[in-house]
Amino acid sequence: MTISDHLARAAATAPQLEAQRRLGTATLIIDADAMFAELLAGYLAVRHDLRIVATSSMLAEAAKASADHRPGLVILNPALPDGSGLGLVETLTAANPAVKVLVIGSAMTLMGIRRGPIPPAVGAVVEKSAGLSRLSREIARLQLDADHSGCGKDIAIILSRRELDVFTQIGHGLTNTEIAARLGISPQTAETHRKSITKKLAATGPRLIRLAVLHVSGITPQSQA
Image (tube, rainbow, N blue to C red; front, side, top):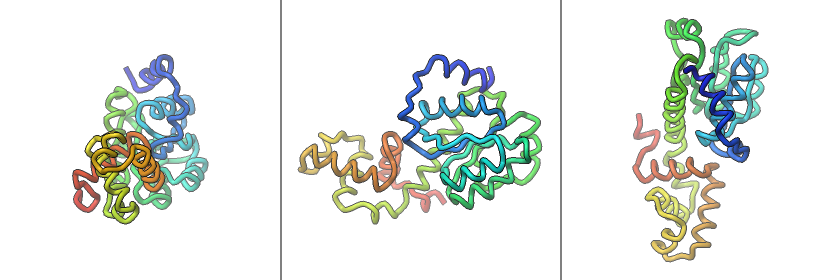
């Protein structure tokens, strides 16, 4: 079953949680097939904690969306009506140097890409004929890479000392009540610190937890080099 088949089935059975579109990594989907792009957007918003900022089917439209939203993740089918989408990678990188690009397309399209130099921002190449599980695995891996980029030494500067204490306990898997007991503060104060951390790091839900776990584990962009 192709990715398109899986997406059609998922759209018919999975709840469409519109609130999910406002959370997670800013994601731009570029594909000439508008229906495929919309199905993929709905699936990723629900299943992968991604904030879909736009879907585009033309080069100019995609370039504008990139400049407007500075996405952290881009899913790109380079076979576009007005030219090759690979030319967009430089534009995407200029808008956000930390952007991760997943290239998706037909076997014929990807054959030409694999023969030439692949831009550093391209972290994965997936055929549309592959299963949805393969696409999901690659997206999860790129999300983790993006989290590494967001979990650097600056966190110790961005957060106050007490917020850093709370952030560390989040990384250990503690709830607000457990954090309060460990740090000798009230659960309400722990919740206030958590909200402040969320705002400062622009990370909510699963992404905040992933960042905290990476922080506790000592995984930073510097240690990944």
